[in-house]
Image (tube, rainbow, N blue to C red):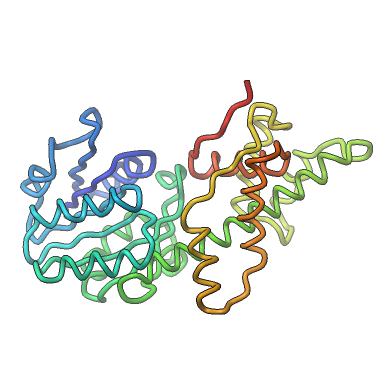
Length: 295
């Protein structure tokens, strides 16, 4: 089986390697010729066996729009495009509608796993027609974590459902990181009795109700820099967090915790908060997101 993969950045390059390790032939394309397998999209399409599957792993918005549009010009009826970026779910409707007259299918895939996905696998949430999902299942199986399929993969529903689920996933992620970060600041502030902040978080990794992979990553970050002296307390917010709140408002669903976590990120751009240093360190650990370094 072969697949085209567009976008060979932090996640895309690791996904290419994981797929190849599973025996899937991957033809990768990136605007950076140093990492690309082919010079352009036409060459990528020519290198794949029809009916083709092409996975786009590029930033949401105009870049995704451009890739989908350019692919539609080199692919044929019966081919399938999977958008694995963090597109807003409403964009999926548009892309599927644009491709339908040409007989090109579309699937949206929410992907979680960050820079650790090569080793641990990626959590996958996909939306699309059943027959398209079944056709791409060997690819999803290669990317997801080992173990029962239902613990690392879900066909959420029709087109748009995968990115909607990923949007909510990221909203929850915001709130979880904020809770850990605020706990860190409180422990770190009580220096008269708390002598081992890193050890406290490390002890929570087994047997406690707050154990999680995010907690493990926070421990890694603390072991690297216990006081986060090299990190500014400045944290970006991705589109998914804002979209989650907008959807909550549109559907009259209260999300006070998620909302507060996003507003806390706005605060981080005004004050160098210890809690927001922890959030910045967490984002760097799981996703390789850039942090602002102190001079």
